[in-house]
Structure formats: structure tokens, C-alpha cells
Image (cartoon, rainbow, N blue to C red; front, side):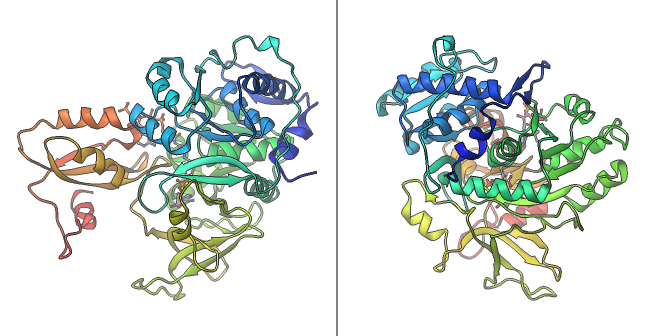
Length: 498
Ligand code: MCA
Ligand code: AMP
């Protein structure tokens, strides 16, 4: 038995007739049938030239066929690289050129525009649409429903997920089979997940949260997944009746709290509500408890590390805290110069070491080296402290990052696009509080001519960036506040315009 995703996710379920996915139209698909579908796709892609170790970039929308490509990557020993299906062409080009995939899967409407970039690097492009139709699934009846897996070992790469880390352009975090398997085991034990559970899954499947935390834990424990395309509150509330678990970002919970249907009786079948990817306000934790009697369990993770800490299933779930380090994961607070002392005198950079920590950034040894301390701890860029009971509190970030509805938005990336507009001299993007999404980006811009229409600028930005990164508001200023070193003082902008 190796420690691979195959031996943990697929092998135990090869003959499992239990329902794996319940889809929005009520269709149920068993583990066995889902693995058969993935096996057929594996044969098809192998015939087209997919090999062990190849990168497979999957940009198709959330549907069972897109998810089956994850299993296809495991069966064929290739490296799964999921990407937001809404990314613009410009954003997508960067990822293709940086990751050099052998296969790229996207909606048929995008094939024509993306194909020339794929052709340049010898990457094969196939279509897959939201309804599951496309090149990937055409003529699958001609392929065998079992597939002899390409065995991978624990240090082999399983997935590539892009993140901007603390600075700069997105970098491909290389995650190994061991990273993913060890983390899922820990979470199953900690959260008491087993085959009697049904998980409400309304997250995207191109991030750690919706893919690894949700899918790996469910498959490893033989649980059922209510697979919802996106956070549709009616479908989520309907699913409470027969489900036991939900994993979500804080926006899921603030939206539920506002809904009159949420109460104790509608959630009485639910065992556990989990939140992560962004800070859950103490007030949200408290309101949800008052309405439903459930204490949301908050946990903390990163693309590079999977999950690091969690509040307990049994025991105190502290509002405002992300809980205690997972077993086998060492977390320390590295006091950085200039930080204010807390009562415990221990506020500082959160650093992490353990089997969950990624292998490095693809083709980027310098950034990989910068991301680790000399003694091998990963530097998260998050600032925090432990309380006397060993619970971790995240109190800030040492990285210019806005988390909007659980999506990470890097101001520098937006500023770079805004500054390319011919009427802009300079810009500063910063986050302001938002009741629904936690934070949203807004932009302060200095224009060559103040009469330039902001509409032109916003159209330009929307052409280049996916919707969640586009500033919700533009402020035209005569100048940006700067310190003596010439650095823009975003805190001043934030205080003034929040
Ligand atoms: C949608 N919009 C957004 C966002 N989502 N704008 C800013 N931030 C967002 N997150 C835009 C839409 O394009 C739309 O624009 C408008 O806002 C309203 O859309 P709405 O229908 O309300 O959005 P939605 O489809 O309901 O989405 C909100 C959401 C979604 C459910 C919160 O963003 C979401 O699923 N977030 C989860 C992200 C996630 O999985 N993060 C995990 C990262 P317009 O009206 O102008 O058309 S993994 C991670 O962070 C680590 C590892 C961890 O610890 O988990
Ligand atoms: P990413 O690597 O893009 O998935 O984003 C990871 C970042 O999300 C972390 O470094 C934190 O800043 C933030 N994050 C994740 N979970 C939490 C949480 N429970 N509370 C606060 N911030 C979180």
C-alpha cells in the first residue's frame, strides 16, 4: 500500500456502489460509476498522448466530468492543475506559459482563442462544457471502464495550484501525494468524517478548499457529496434536510444568517459546519450559534500547506481563533522586528513545518528558497499569536492581500493592469470592509486628465481580469499619499475611504 492518492481515494472505492455525488438535477452517481467514468477518460487521454508526470490544466466549469478529470490525473499519474473557468484570456496565457501543460481542457467557446497559445508549446486542447459535453466525453462508450493505474509514490507531484504567496506574480505550488494524503487523514480523524456523512459542496473545485479539503476527505471516508454548482442558498437550505456536513467560506454563513429560513429545525440533521479561507467574524460565529445552536468550526490553511490548524470537533471551538495545530504539524510564531508585544509577548510571523508543506514553486528555486527559513519552516505571511490554551489567532497579514468572499486578490496584479491604461499615471488598490464578501478591492487612481471617463478604465480592467478581482469602486485623486521613501501609504487611503 503506497501513500498515493490512488491507494487512498480510488482503490478502496473501486467496487463501492454507494452514492458518491448527488447532482443539482437529483441524479445520483455511485463511486463505482464515477471511477468508471474517470477510467474511460483516462484511456481516452492516454490514447491521445497523456503520460505520467504531464501537467493537465483543467479550466472547465464545475460539473461531475470536470471532477472526474481529477481522478483521471490520479489514475494516469499526471499532475492536476485546476484553474478558475472565468479567468480572462490574458490571465490564462500566463498560466499556460508558466506551467507548460501537455493537455488543456476548457469550454468549447474558449478553444479558438486559447488554441494558438497551446500550439506554441505543443499542448493538446480539448473542450468540456458545463453540461458535461465536449471532446473529453465524446465517444466514451468505446473505452474500457477499468484502468491500470500509473503508480505514484509519496514524493511524486499530484497537483499544481497557483497562488501569489506573499508577493509578485502567481507561482505554481507543487503539491505531492504525501502532502494531500496526510492532510486528508488528519482532517477525517479530527472532524469525525465517515461513510454515513453527506457533505454539502457549494465551493469551486479549483482551490484547495473545494478540491482537497472537501473531495479528498469525502472520498477517503466513503462519504456522499451533495455537489452544488455554486452557492445557491435555496439548494443549500434544501440540502440541510438530508446532509450532515458543510464546508464554506464566511460569506456562506453571513448569507445564511440573513435568510429567514435558517433556524434550529432546518439544520437539525447537520452534524458540523466548517469555515475557512478567510477570517470568520466573532459576530458571525455568535449569530449562527444563536440561530441554529451550531458552533461553526473554523480552520486555517493555505494553498502551499493545505490545512494547518483547526478548532476541535469535541472541545471548545473558540470564536475568533483558527484552532490548534494539526497532529504532526509544527507551528511557531517568529517575532518580527517592529511588531507590538501582546500580553503574551508572542505576536509575529506564523511559520509552519510538516508533511503538509508543499515541495516548492514550479521552476522558481529563488522564490522557493525565500519562502522558507534556514531551518525549513514555511513563512506564511500571516501574523498571529497563540493564547494560553494553545489556540492560534490570526491578527494580520504581512502581505498585500485582500480576501474577497474567500478569493485572494493581490492589489499589485490589479494595479499593474490599471497602470497599463493610457490615461492612468499611477494607482493604489486596497481593501475595504464589505458586509457580504468580508473585503472588496477598490482603486485610487491618478489620471493624466481628470476628465477621462472611469467607465473606459473599468471596461479595460474587466477585459483583463476575472470579475472578483475588478475594483468595486474607483476614486480619482490628484495624488496618492506617500511616505518619505515614496511608498504609497495604503493605510491612509483605507482609513479615509473605508
Ligand atoms: C463573485 N463576485 C465576487 C466574488 N464572487 N466579487 C468579489 N469577490 C468574490 N468572492 C462578483 C460576481 O462576479 C458578481 O458581479 C457579484 O460579485 C455578485 O455575485 P454573486 O452572485 O453574489 O456571487 P456568488 O456567485 O454568489 O459568489 C460569492 C461566493 C463565491 C459564493 C462567496 O465568491 C465563492 O464561492 N467563494 C469561495 C472562494 C473559495 O473557494 N476560496 C477558497 C480558496 P456582478 O454582479 O458585477 O456580475 S482556498 C484557500 O483560501 C485556502 C487554502 C483555505 O484555507 O481554504
Ligand atoms: P491561499 O493560499 O490563496 O489559499 O490563501 C491562504 C490565505 O488565506 C492564508 O495565508 C490566510 O491569510 C487566509 N486564510 C485562510 N484561512 C483563514 C482563516 N480561517 N482565517 C483567516 N485567514 C485565513
